[in-house]
Length: 246
Image (cartoon, rainbow, N blue to C red):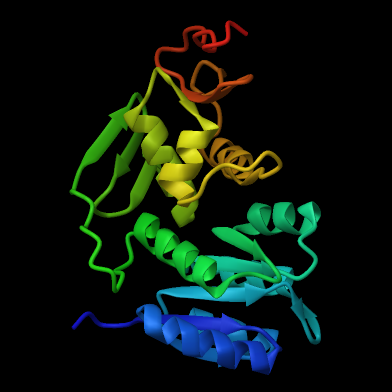
């Protein structure tokens, strides 16, 4: 029988925590819940959990500050719950380092599906017996990705990436020199269909760009192709035209 995945739930709504714990325990998770930010940070940094679910609205502070404190010392995957579903909450969370977000109210089944998707792309073990990714190194010019070690180096410098960022960069590197659509990036890496106003892929790619920096020739490493998607540039040449001729 597969070992349950340990999950940390940080939310001050005790009733919701009880309901989610009961549901998630039936989908392969072992859930511990805490109800304030300080306790959440301490538990997340203790290293005993594979993933965390963090509510934006917490007493004595907000989830964004909790996420900042966690990200300063840990790469544990974090899914944020946003009560209002406002775009600014989603953008801020992704900028700080959230792996995904889910607006309240939500279907627990969708939460479980997103958590398993995050675990797959972060390389953590999942109770669903997903096959482990094959050990492989991908090198495109001075960027090297090691899928087994879940590490990325650029010009010899180690780059810290979240699970979502790692997955997106891996797909772009495997497709270096050709355009990858936002729809493909979203479905294959984030585990869901791209929605018209969902900027998750764009925010993650923006963070990858900042972390890698520009090419030695000062050109962009990852270019946005209007109406098409993104391309990891090879050789610094001009990006190909989109399928629509834009």
